[in-house]
Amino acid sequence: MSPVETLAAVFRRVVMVAILVAALSALVGFFVAHFAHLGGAAQGAGWGMCVVGALIALVTGQSGSPSRMAVEGRSGAFGQFWGRNPALPQSPLLFLGSSVLVFAGGIAVIVLTY
Image (cartoon, rainbow, N blue to C red; front, top):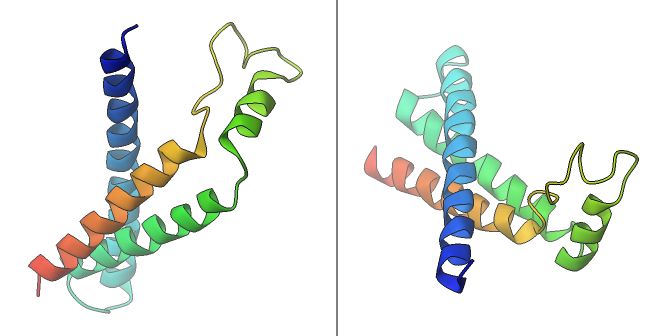
């Protein structure tokens, strides 16, 4: 793989994780706002995205070095995660990028719905 293909694959993975996390956190925020009568649905979704994005960034920042994570992920009772595939995500930096996107998206939703 060329460096451009590798960078594109990493970017795709970061965006896919960000979309998944944003959708789940927006759904949780929507339900909290709806059932607790705390405001509009969009506001709840935005706050949910902000809270979850910040929590994931906090946990990811405390998770250790990327090289140690890669080594620990490749060695285990079942070899390389039930097959010959490399450990995913190999680096907490992928989650950090996704959480920053989710947090920024939550801020954007809050600002645009005021």
